[in-house]
Length: 291
Image 1 (cartoon, rainbow, N blue to C red):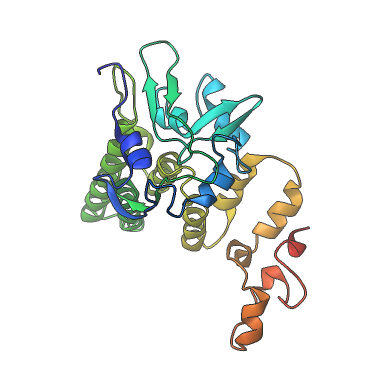
Image 2 (cartoon, rainbow, N blue to C red):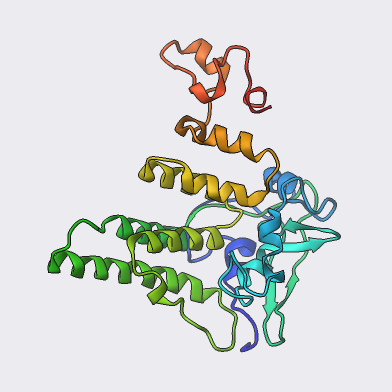
């Protein structure tokens, strides 16, 4: 219907095995078969919603702002599809419900989520790679091909071409989730440099792949390219100021962005050396080194 967003969300995250799927873990719609217990536990179900993992406050409150900071407009349907208010807090509905319909005819879009999966019987497939993920990875790669030190006419032309190609990908992904009656392109003029376009790609990946287990690894990849964790820290600090000085101090070290080896692995493999950000690995656990 003209006043409703398309069926992409329900097709991808509800029915599963959509035409956009590249690789996903399949959980058969059969209560006698294994269920997706991780989603049921972390995101919630018909008995316990929200689950133990919830959206950060700056994300769940984004549409209460006159100018949203995470999403490009109040008509970005991904906000409404991915989250739902549960009392005084928000829960994550992506993967936890069988579908969603966003109505955008009024001044404020409204969402109707399908039923939550029953506790212990979540049959939502877990998507590892899908088309928009790969498209945005391509956009990221295009941006990295830009040589800002090449001031020749050919170099400038190549830069402009790569910026436009990356922008076209991001804009295409963004427009798919724009439920406004009059869709508006992202303003290309605001992203005329390599850094600006790199930030746009990161922002679109955050919006498109929210709660799909991609964000931390995107930030790690960005840190590796930058050679520092400044961007990562700025994103992590959006979640709140509690223990901010300790958090910033720890994440300043590049070692801290990588996982530790389990101490049992170190004991059986003498060639492994524990990540120095997490202690020796003999007596210190991951939790212990973060107190």
